[in-house]
Length: 485
Image 1 (cartoon, helix red, strand yellow):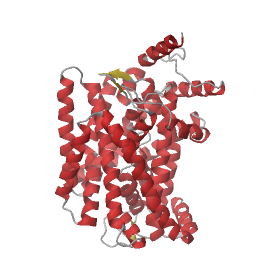
Image 2 (spheres, helix red, strand yellow):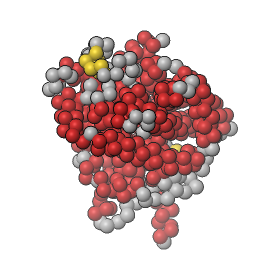
Image 3 (cartoon, rainbow, N blue to C red):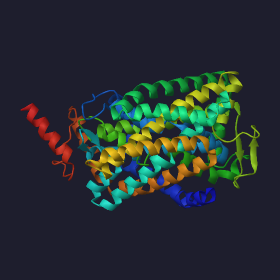
Image 4 (spheres, one colour):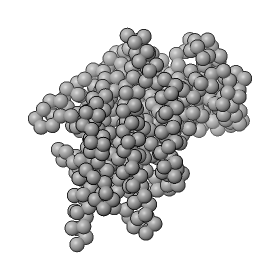
């Protein structure tokens, strides 16, 4: 089983694919004239504007749902794995994919807003919706929806629950099966409450867990401040093969940095647009900019916190290009993952590290599974309607809870490999879609900028801009005009 999964990953994540993903992010960055720099002030301000409604959530709640998915195992275990397989240089490539990936995140999230629909009283949207409405290829949209269901409900929850279970076992000696049952019980309480309950939990949990984690990282950095120039130098020299120890694995540094970077920040993957579509905003570009900033929060802040804790303390192993021969072995016998981060914090704060990372990982990974459910639910809503919808939603909940428990008790290697398959399927399909469909998002960005220059609070008129099949916005603009008159 594991051999077949690894073979499939070899195709989905081959070297050309890695460079294609970098190229797509760079292309969108150029086409948007590096909005991730030009509009950074708007990104921050827009996070806290807009209110929720009966049909949608606020910009901040949508950001929190998206961050629930982004800030997860990838930030702790994924960053550690990148360093284990690609050396310190992998961290630079994680930063790179975050910076240029913000362009991809803007495009896909703006498209989700443009082509969102109001279904069963709530906003729904995402790649399946914009593929059908924007490109007009129904089978392509259905294929993405099915792939997303496969990834979000079956393949990827196991990565999150597996990391929680490992962390709890390492820190407190709790049996994996017991941890799995606790996760499933708590998760059931939330997902049976619908999108509003998911948004509420995410809104309060995500900022708390991210700030707490970064604060501990800052304490460790502060206690080892003299190491900062050396660590920064090591990251950059290793990224370009200039370091004598890590120079032979530059290919691995790029591949693992990009792969784990995309897994963590999800830019271009097609996950963020699901939450973006649920936001109540007056212009699609507004939520596109908010979602672009979420990539920064995830990788530049939270992943960097993990990387610095590990590298400042030297608590890591790195293997050669063959994937087995040790280059650095500071933690003999410790599997790549949460163990590195636990050892790093423990080395500076004895008696605190293992438990802190285990609890952090619980919050990070748990909220990610919660977000996975929301994305899966959105695609079930796309595929199934009417009386069958409630039955399908119930079956989805049971399947996801089962996959979550199964992942908790399986080996980490298989869990990560299955997750990579799910991610690879979604990335391939979504990248093709947003390359074909980038024009409406770019039109929306220009319209937003033009209205801002006029001192207006931008509103969206899809008909005036020549964007077809954006029925929600046609009706919304008519409604706004009626209110004004």
